[in-house]
Amino acid sequence: MLITFCSKGSHDITMFGDIAQQLIHMMGFCETVPGAIREEDVNQALRNLQHQIEVTKQEKKQGDVEQPNPLDADLDEDEFEPEICLSVRAMPLIGLLESAIKDQSYIMWE
Image 1 (cartoon, rainbow, N blue to C red):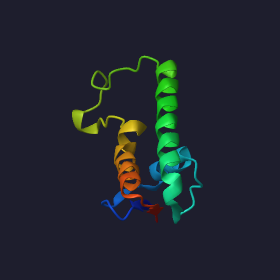
Image 2: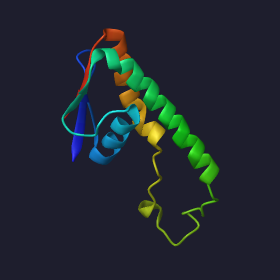
Image 3: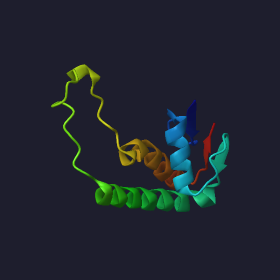
């Protein structure tokens, strides 16, 4: 499933459903699709998301155990896919939220 976020002053952003729902939850909203954030709630949603991303980063740092280098294993280079952290995946949504604040707009997803 794909979820598309939109706001009137910005380009649409499409994400995989599981990641999008996780980010929606981090903003403090129900993950149901479709959904929306009212104009007056966008600033708080951005603060919530940024805070939760920082909490997640700290938890990951504390829980990090030295992972074996996949290139040392018997994997072909083509088989290795690096993990993309949540903070990187959230960047387009953060930009959309900042744009909505600037334009005094709402956010919708479907």
